[in-house]
Amino acid sequence: MKAVVVLSGGQDSAICLALAVRKYGSGEVAALTFSYGQRHSVEVKYARRLAGRFRVAAHKVVRLGFFSDITHSALLDRGAEISRAAGRSCPNTVVEGRNVFFLSAAAVWAKSLGAADVYTGVSEADFSGYPDCRGAFIRTQQRALRLALEWPVRIVTPFLHSTKADEWRIADRLGILDLVKNETVTCYNGVPGRGCGRCPACRLRNAGLASYERQAACGAGGGGLK
Amino acid sequence: MKAVVVLSGGQDSAICLALAVRKYGSGEVAALTFSYGQRHSVEVKYARRLAGRFRVAAHKVVRLGFFSDITHSALLDRGAEISRAAGRSCPNTVVEGRNVFFLSAAAVWAKSLGAADVYTGVSEADFSGYPDCRGAFIRTQQRALRLALEWPVRIVTPFLHSTKADEWRIADRLGILDLVKNETVTCYNGVPGRGCGRCPACRLRNAGLASYERQAACGAGGGGLK
Image (tube, rainbow over all chains, first blue to last red):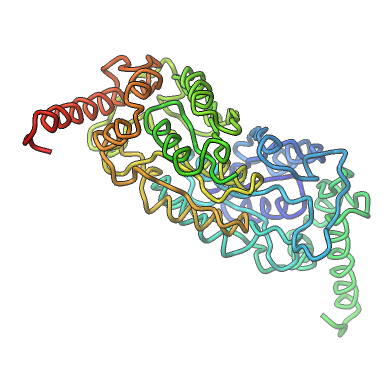
C-alpha cells in the first residue's frame, strides 16, 4: 500500500482521494474516515460511497467519540448556533486539535499497511481559520509522527496553498466535477451537494465553485480573463 | 486550573500526579486516563482510586477504542505472547503512537480548562524502547500542539532522564512509597503492586525498586554507596 487518504466525505478530501488514486492506482490506496460526533455525520455515509466509487483497497471508519468530553465546539453540538465571534480569528465550529488526531491515526494505520503517504485536503489559503490547517502545524506534526512511529511518513497536502476555486478546477481536470458537486457533503447542517447555502462551509464551497465557473466560462468563450 | 496529568494508574504517572499536586495544590490539578483496549485495563480502576486519593479537581476517563482497528500490539491482544524480537529495539507491546494521542487529548482538555501544563511520566533513560517516550518526540509534539491549538501548552516530563530507581527515590521523598508500591499497577498482566514479576513492565519496575532499596539501605547504614 502506498497512501492513506483522510476522507471526510467533503469536496477537499474527495479530490485528494482522486489525486492519490491517479498517482498510485486504487489498489495501493486506503481511505480513513472519522466519526467524531460531528453534527453533519451524514458525511460518513458519503465517505463510504466515495471509497466505493474510487474502489480503494481498504476503507475504515474510526470512532473518535471523546472530543465532546474534553472540549466544546458548535460542530459537536446540534443545539449550538454557528458563529464567528467579533475579533476572533476562528469560528466556534473549530474542534480543537482535530487534525492532530486525524493525521496521527492515518499515520499509524499507514505504518501498519507499509504506506508512507498520508493525504489530507487542508488549505491555509481559503479556509475557516482553523490553526490545524496551516502548513507550519502540518510540517511540525509530520516531524513528531516520524519520531513517534520511527516511520518515514509524509503528509501530502495538495491544496495547502489552493483556493476553493483552484480545487474545483482540479476536480474538473480530473473529470470528477459533477461527482464532487453532487456526491460530497461539506455543509455543517449535513445537506449534501450545494448544502444549506447559509453556513460558513457552504459559503466557502459555493463561492469557490461560482468563481471557478465564471473563470471557466470566460476561458471557454475564448480570450476571457483567467 | 494549572495542570492536566496523564494518569495511567502505574507508578510513573502516580508520582507525576503527586508532583503536580505538590506544586499547584489538588484544586488546580486535573487527571486524564485512557481506556484504549489495553489488556491490563484494571489500571483504569487504579487510576480512579489515585485521583480520589490525591483529591484532584477533576478526573476523566476517555475511551480511545480505535487502536486495534489501525495497528497491532500485544498490549491490545490478550492472546498474544509478550516478546522482544531479536534485533528489534522495541518490544511487541508498543502501541504505535499512543503518546501522540494521550498528550494531544490532555492538551486539548488543558486548553478548555485554562491550564498550560500537561504532565507525563515518560522516561528515555530506563524504558521499554518505545520511541514516543523520548525527549525529541516530546519536544516536537509540544511544538505541533502549540501550533494546532494556539495555546502555550507545556509538556512537563519530570522523569525524562530518570531511572526507575530515581523515581522510587522521589516517591519516598514525597512520602508516598507505600502508596506507589501497593496502589498502582504497571504489570502487563494486570496484577497490581509487585505484579506478575515476569513481564517486561514488572521487571523494570521491580529491578528499579530493588536498586533503590539497596541504595536506601546503604544510605541508612551510613557511609554506603549512593
